[in-house]
Image (tube, rainbow, N blue to C red):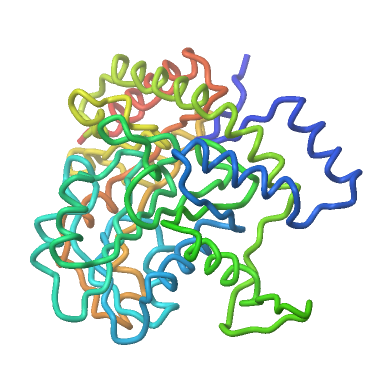
Length: 381
């Protein structure tokens, strides 16, 4: 009997959430309204009381964070070459220049040694990514930022529920952006959130996400900035409220599945497995994805052939991520070229993302591990 196809990511909804969405639709108030306010309040409580504003995407949150930080033409933002395209796209959209640094080979997070070396007179901010949900070295990151008087905009798209030394990512720091895309640990279907420092920044976020509109004392409106249209609908927020209530359970199960991956993984030739979490703080990793590096130099097959062979066995595989400095945009606009950031380039060439989501069973992990071992053994040089 053939087994069902196993995707590499999949959201989970209970019947109460589905019913709740129907209730919102029956209310006829489906744009931003009471459920958006509820989600923002719940996220704020989850993050220790910090102000939170939700958006249609983490990409919008990144752009608004950059604008709140005052980043614009003539400024430079230091960011990691190993991340998703949204970070560099938004740096470019506000008119600033991304300064790429390499990732650490083990964590795949931003190399803070290189960050320090790249700070110059035009540097305005640092934009790191918590790769796969593994936090950067937050103590050192913020020490660098304080010494050089820089803003920090954390791309925490993969890190909702992650923590550093017992503090949740987003509960401290500067500006933090989360994603609630369906392949994240919790979802609002599409959506994101921006954590800010005070009420003034929260008001700025509200204006940036809704056309730049401000209400005047006489009840009319005015526009002082060329804002976006990035306000979250209530239908999405209703999903997010339910998902946030389950987030700790979602992440507990992800960690459980990852421990099984580590216990069961055994391939020849050997793959490079992801970082298991910071020593003594392993549960600070929320495990948005389980991304390994293929030993392509010891295989007769390439990555597309590996992915196709896994799909033939009913298993979906993702790729996370491409090297940002080698994108067509970065090559043409900012001089990206091969060899500049070798660790990021190695990850980009060899990475694959295995299935990892809440509804997976232990047997699904065993099935994936067995299939990877079979494909690699068959493709060994």
